[in-house]
Amino acid sequence: QVQLVESGGGLVQAGGSLRLSCTASGHSLSPYAIAWFRQAPERQREFVAGVRRFGGGTRYVDSVKGRFTISRDNTKNTVDLQMDSLKPEDTAVYYCAADLSLSLSTSDSEYDYWGQGTQVTVSS
Image 1 (cartoon, one colour):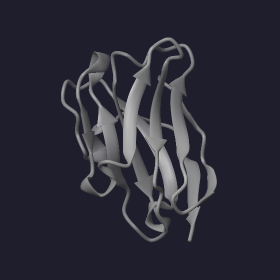
Image 2 (cartoon, helix red, strand yellow; image 1 turned 180 degrees about the vertical axis):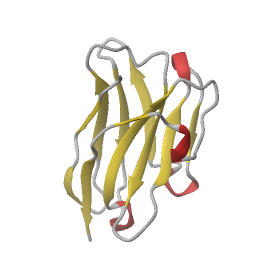
Image 3 (tube, helix red, strand yellow; image 1 turned 90 degrees about the vertical axis):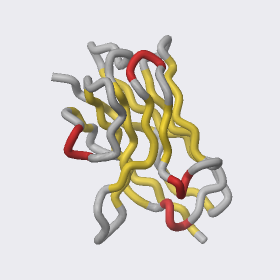
């Protein structure tokens, strides 16, 4: 059982930056496709960004392209989401998720392991 833990959320003004990290104790994240999802109040959970297994390609939802960057740090065993130029509409609980699939799905039903989430609030 892979237990994912997110960190790095908080409150930031519009235009600011935050860096989220996802890690798993006792398991390497390298064999897993890792994705970040987010869920705002009264909205469905949506895919934000993902990275394929073993340092493969990345994928982003259109609304964050050019502002968010997902990356692996294998020395720290983390997958980070650097979020720049934040907007109030980025406010949500952010979750990291892991899957052993070769593909990089945008569907939350495809992911087997989830963290508890971290709150990101962007004030206007």
